[in-house]
Image (cartoon, rainbow, N blue to C red; front, side):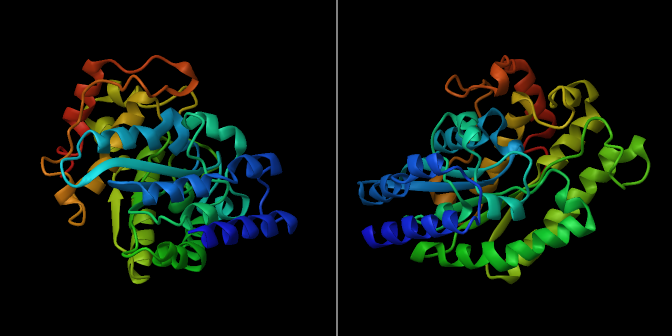
Length: 322
């Protein structure tokens, strides 16, 4: 373990010296002991389910990593005693640019100020390995031909080798693709046909794109599940427009806490219902229809009401989309 840590720190130093990513040196210094701390967790009694997140602001809004952590931890009934999470997140980025640029220091505070790794390499090379890795691309990236091709390329060249290796821990992690959604108001510079149909078109194209990502990862020998958050947004768009409107921040694209809870439910379900983990969750996912007090909604906004959470899950929750 100590040898892995030394190699990891050396690699990070080389990357900085050659300018291969732009994470600030102070951030790297503050994160230098993170791999060691997580490595020590491997040696502690009890089995922890380990979940990593790579993405952008669609993942860090409303602290989705720790929201999913809480949903999973509250449903454990098997041998696992806890859920550990790690993340490499950078607002506005794609899987390709996150690979080259790494995490943004200021984004760590969006997930409670902890569990952020400086680079994807550092995250996926963690000595403990990961049981689940959640991947989220740019909000429209998988929908358009050029950016979809870029995503497929970086998955094949960089992500798949690391995921298969999983720091020498067997088996490789389950990859969960976080399928995102169309914007509430049309983005005029996106070439997706009629503006008044852009939500539907973008959501469908994203579903198609993440399907292509799943095929690529499976060809690379990895197990893959898709969390259909985009389909859940579409269900609410069609059946309850007032609730669909409440899924979005005022910028018409990022999720409110209500939207993040719905997304978290689908991400957690993708893990709980996968055959590899069913023994850990004998009773399935136990969804609490109240916002967790320990999770701070983005921008210090008010959490969603219990009634709205119940309504959203009743229309577009994991059970409804089966």
